[in-house]
Length: 513
Image 1 (cartoon, helix red, strand yellow):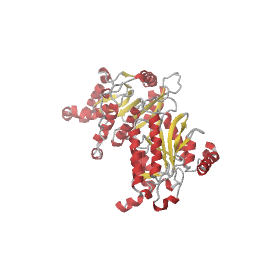
Image 2 (cartoon, rainbow, N blue to C red; image 1 turned 135 degrees about the horizontal axis):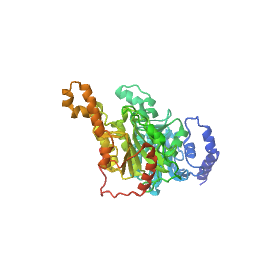
Image 3 (cartoon, rainbow, N blue to C red; image 1 turned 45 degrees about the vertical axis):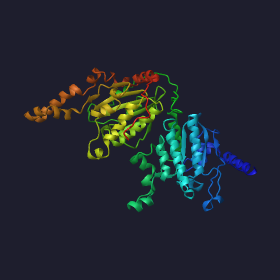
Image 4 (cartoon, rainbow, N blue to C red; image 1 turned 120 degrees about the horizontal axis):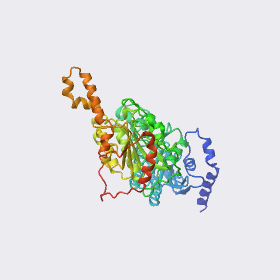
């Protein structure tokens, strides 16, 4: 009994000597905080309640009984972030390198089960060297137990993983199954097999940072959604992310106080260039449409031909998907389709309305795209938006060509309202390509083929390269002046707050994975 009391007193003293957030903030330049410092900084002051502080491992092989550490390398418990309850676990690299043991896994599973039971987000602060080798298959079984809980929690409570140190082997699959992953630059990495194994098997020379660092996963693989320069920024980004999402799938995001004022945005009138081939930044459309300083971009450095992120319109949290004309003219490709589909499914799972901004000339052509599955991956985005039952609003700013018009939340796949600016061009393809097909004989027989092509291009553009034909058929609900966009969206999302859809009974759909 005295030993237990001694340990509890020791932990109480550690907490008192922590010095609070001010001390931790002074260490902003320090790359790595301890597991307890991370929890202390992340949660509201004095809100943390630890669970399993006295748990120890059960291993006796390799004289492990001589190395007993209370907590067994992971700090678990619950607290509040800006007054909202969350469950959290933080792996402690100072204890066996944060290696996962049977009891370490049991602690994580226990707090995950609690999060699902009470309906609160689960945040994992990962910093582990992998499975504890001394335990063999028991540690591997511990990983599988966590994976199973990840799947059971998916779509029920938000799951966020912060990678704040090494994450290798089986450890990478739990973050991959969570909703969002954030990595710390230079101090964290994720890979299934490390540089030494890669060199042995493939003879490639690569560093841990090149193979699985924050930059590699933010730009190339898309495994991580956000990056941070240090632990403090990482934890702040997790807090910001939580502010846009609800506690669980049965709740909605708390609406912030908002008073409507003069909602005209004259800046929007000049964003789309007169030259249809000249790019512009879709982020300018976003920032002039949403509440001030509310746009929080996700996956910014991956597949930058499409933009996804959270924002607020009239104080309501809204998920935004928008083509980016500044990159590849905003075409849909393999990576952009996967990126947007995943984001759409998250928003739908957690009752977050969607705003889709469209300027898309089609799907990216080429053997690389076809051989890497543009058909299947494009279908993922089509499936995700068709399946989504949350309020869905589309705004076509310029081009909406071909099958990409259908995929980008068209009226035909269940969008609630579709708006277009007068600059919108809704057609099967661009005027030049269409004219070369439709008027091929006339052009070939003309004395001045180039002049005839330009004439026919203009004829086609006058007929189809506008939003009026679509509006006549009811595929576009209204053609609005750009400056009126925000006012219209405020009213539209307000009206859609009560949207409810009863879907057919089924176990689950079969998304084209």
